[in-house]
Amino acid sequence: DVSVWQLSAPLMCGGKTVILDEITDVHTMVSLIRQYQIDLVEVAPVVLQLLVSYLDSLTESQRQLPGLKYIMTTGEPTPVPLVNKWLNMYPLVPVMNCYEPTEASDDITYEITRVPLPAGTTRVSIGKPLPNLAILILDEELDLMPEGVAGELCVAGIGVGPGYWNNVAKTQASFVPNPYQHEPLMPMYSDRLYRTGDLGYYDEHGNIELLGRKDEQIKIRGLRVELGEIEAALEAIEQVQQAVVVVKNNELGEAALCAYRTGD
Image 1 (tube, rainbow, N blue to C red):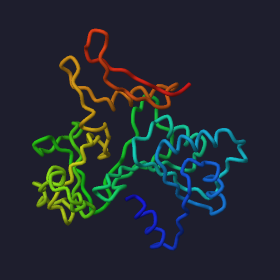
Image 2: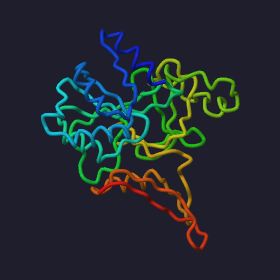
Image 3: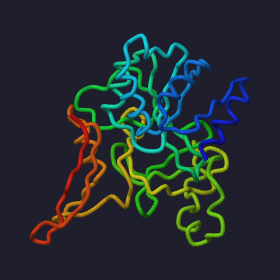
């Protein structure tokens, strides 16, 4: 999926793709970045965490990456503390945070963060859609949600795939007719929507804030709760690097939230 653009894009601009055999081998990764003067590295946040931890163990002269222009994160939400840690170490190398549903051609939005995020920031924005793509925030009836109101991220445009191979039922559930295809701002090839199952909203700047999965929305004591929202709030605490929140039954058999974290 994401490898398609990683291999083809450099060929279209006279560049080169350098492939690391073992993605967790951060020592070799740093060596390759220096050897080939790589200017863009794309990794999942969990790998970036390994990379940052390794670089932090080096001296200032050993951790120099003079050719690097961007670090790109994709595949899962990127924790705010991780972004800030990177930017404090490499203030001239911004973080490009992407959103990449495979069914819509991967990496279809991005947000570039150039300075550490302010205290209290709970999540890293996934930014705006690429040209020729649109992301609509819709409810279960496919009605548009206003700014600041959460709904399902639904993708339209040239990147939306035809469906799942030999799985008609799943295709019909996830790829649906686009009721907004004739709206003036819709890109070409917008007759279908891909329903991602992800929840988010547009903020006042037109950027998308990703909240989590629809199937992570639970109800406790009559209240709807987003596990991703709680995880983001926990990760905003300085001593917390990563957090996971799950639902467990307490000694009374009632549903309760249980949080796990890594950090200082």
